[in-house]
Image (cartoon, rainbow, N blue to C red; front, side):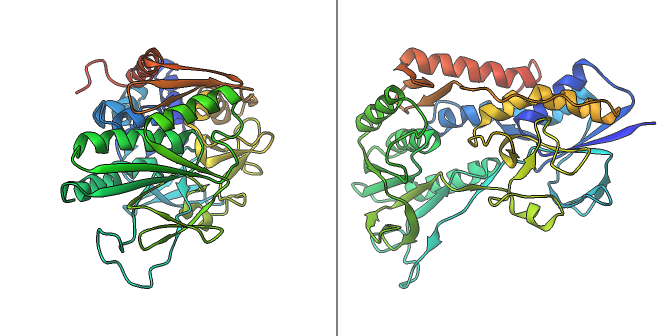
Length: 388
């Protein structure tokens, strides 16, 4: 009897699942993938794209082509409803897909800041609300980035613009430096000022002192002022308001903090934690839901809470593939052991990068070239050999 395997979302972990079934086909398993686009961005390459070093297409995995290799059906419509009891999913186009085994790899979104605008939006200018660029969800970032760049193109020559990033983790630091590099290139006639707000008392909480120092040095080189121990709370005319009521001037606000689960999951019977993520056991099976799995940012590993970073989805991928195959055949599942330390490669927007692993850290142009080679190999692994 054919088992119906449903992959909801086209994240990094599901790319490994499709690769595994392409390499070892199983005629007793019918695979369907549902996602909003046939292309999925690889998060590691996003900084290079933001800084203008590569095109959007060069950051993407061709999920539709990967489905063809795996003998899977691809449907370009995202899930909007999910029934655990009827074991079916409803898509945005209204179609209903039944499943025996399902897996979520749908990423995360952000809790956006509160907006306080008693004057009303007056457009670009000192009294206007800052232009907000939310860094999640990743799947639609290119639309938001393009809209921001179109606004920047309309600015008068000689204008002064303050770009503020909220979030002192690797994503917040890397995003700010990459965005500033591209904006400098797009409009060299504008006076750009960068600022970073970190709720923690230090940059890169959890990293060693050397990676933190290297990141602080890179931010200084990029002309960025850093505010630690400050939490951004709301957009207000002309800037961002902190939790202590301080006003920090901003024309453009990059929001890279407050990751939460996809909002539509709240309408399902899936168990969710306080942030809206799906709790999973060591096998990546959803707690209390046999035959339903989750991986990547949308999952919350009960035994060991993990940062929301693509590297963990990549590490989960092979075990998720093994366990989905096992679940389809009623076989025992394999536990996934999260790595104690992972290598983080942080682009600094100036042709350099920082490598961070535990207390170790080093930087240079060679690190950036190393990072680009790693990212290119990863994307090529899942794409057709001669991809346009």
